[in-house]
Amino acid sequence: MALLEDMFKGGNIVMGLAIGVGAAIVAPAIAPALRPLAKAVIKAGLIAYDQGRVALAELNERTGDIVAEARAELAESATTAEQRKPAETTAEQRKPAEPTAEQQKSAEAYPRPGFASPSPTT
Image 1: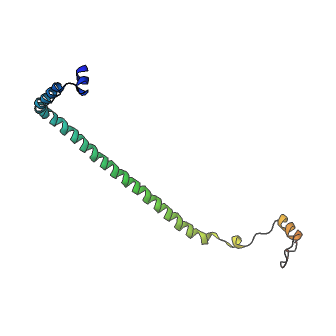
Image 2 (image 1 turned 90 degrees about the horizontal axis):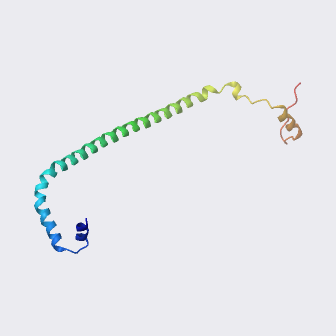
Image 3 (image 1 turned 30 degrees about the horizontal axis):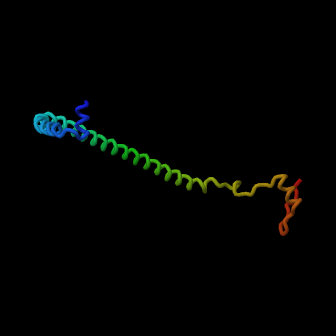
């Protein structure tokens, strides 16, 4: 450990040259063993990428379907609401409501000029 630390402190140039030469000799022997490992890592990355693309495409399709359903429901509710409006208004709904006793007392107590107050019916 101390040998490695001393090398990085910048002290021994011979040790640095020995490690460089050793790496140059050992690298060709290690490279053939690392090639299959590198290929396996790249294959795993490609598989993960393809699976991610497929999952994202499915999610996009499902989201699009949900949005289309929501829009269809909104359009359907808007058309049914427009169709119901004329049918729901009856003669009773168009007739003005009878004033309550409280409203009649208020109208009698505070008459509005130009308006005839309704005569009380018995």
